[in-house]
Length: 182
Image (tube, rainbow, N blue to C red):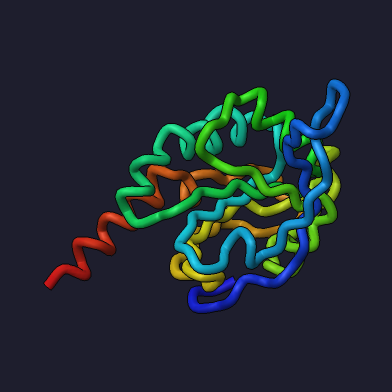
């Protein structure tokens, strides 16, 4: 994916809390599209290999949650974390991390990730097909800034993390803002 490219259109199968649903699991299916998440607003999207995995759960997602307000100051209206996991796993992960600000997007079939060119095999870790770690500032469905970890490849022996960290992205956004002031 490159800057100025439009995100691929897909439908995501999500589960949303609905108090009208009886029982101990008050959730219902809801389809959301690329336009629902990324249309008519400027957002931060980051994708990672998997829910409940070490780097994703210890650093990347919690740090985006902690720095959410800083992203708002840079004109970001929402922060989305996408992973090739189903809606049940993503909801459980969000609950386990006590997320309040970052919203999770389940790409259970990997369709969005594949169309982004970021689907990689992680069979060496027993994961199957997953997302490469990346982030993007997206304005009305179009990539404004792109942050991709080095070494995009199947069965990568390492798990690079730094380029797509929230700290790196915030620094880049602040530098771009300063550079654009006359």
